Image 1 (tube, rainbow, N blue to C red):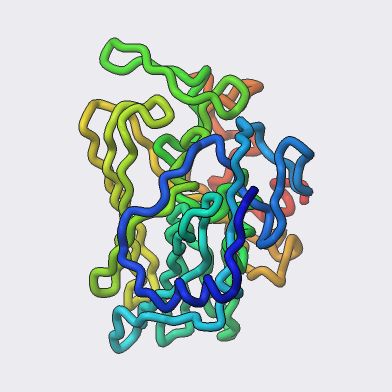
Image 2: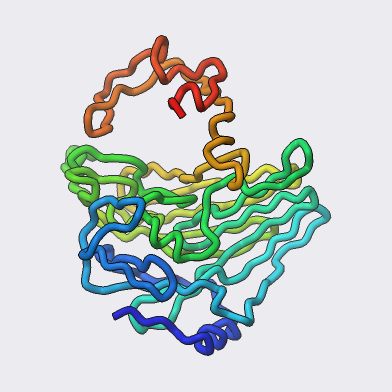
Length: 325
């Protein structure tokens, strides 16, 4: 059975300054709760939006939103003439009756009303608020108000860092330096977005350097089948020009493959605009070719011209026209 702490226990935990030490190491077979106080059992059915197939373990995890705590505290790390960087607890992550583990949230706020938020669970970007031409500020990335949302809809990787390898590895195997490497099958017969327990499910180590947040994680050797160990360092920064920079670095102890990415879902019209604002997006991609895919959405190796295809974005197109919305 999953264990949910009492409000008093959560409050007591928030009184203790939490060092930025290594977080939980979780079994890939363990699965997540749908929301605070409700445990979702994958053996009993699927949530409303559907899920990818995963191995189902007997153990359960639970998430506790920081809304349970009446003693939420913010730490101000950096204040410049234009930007403030603050830190607080976004929620608690637990395995059975072990000590709840804090998931930290970092918030950049500029004098131009730009707000960007990042959490250590999955190294996720959860908020990007930018003012429009009329000065009205809106959050332009998809996200949730609490940790439970990210655990429940984990199959969409919302805002998360993806890896060690983004997208698919056919038949979950490849050749490296003349040796065959077998990796986790988590999308039918294929490897997908980091395997069963990718970087999107890691609680990252964190530190603050001036106006930058640095998240780090070490992928052990043979985790999901990949050679390693691999040290990953991601640096985030909101510049004084309101540019949000992400710098990803990786260093491996053995020859390996790596392809990191971030998966933010954007709606430049803001959350309240919904699909109607998405239809108005104008998209241009300076690319004259694409990789042909097979029925399993795997690249065949053939490079095709975008001319006279739906992939031709050399000139601006409205989303409603190119996606049939």
